[in-house]
Length: 175
Image 1: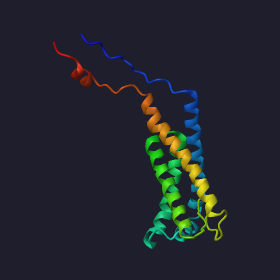
Image 2: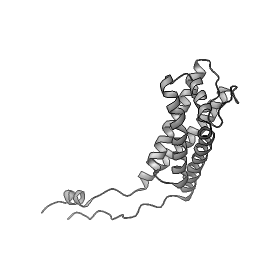
Image 3: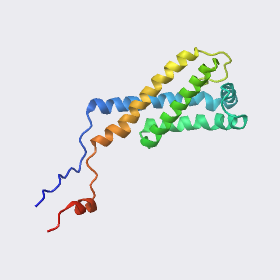
Image 4: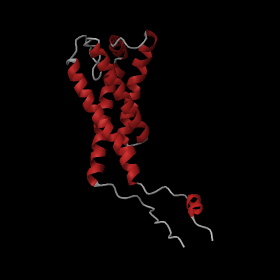
């Protein structure tokens, strides 16, 4: 007779430090994305100019990006703040952070030092050098990668084996 599989109906309790770090990372990114969206929502024309200055998007997509991106940032920040739809929000936030970082690297490699338009729009002169923007974005992405790990990898490790009744029945030996 084969032993019955261990019935683990409750996942292991997440360590307090990991839970706290996940919450802090979530709130940091929520604050960054909500704060970044406010000025862009209030001044879409100025943000469109900042998007144009990157010289990456075709002209037909600049206004669309300037209108949609700030609201997407606000929505994602609110999702992170409320802790809802975390897998999708974390995945999308990390995707955006990678795109933002890639845009900075691309402009830096072309010798362009443009105002990123990240937290305030419409300034012709960069508030910081492109190198500082790059360093800041790498820091934001590091927080995002940690949150990705915490939401997708760490929590999956902490869950019990996903054994359905059919799976258990198929694994039983028949006599």
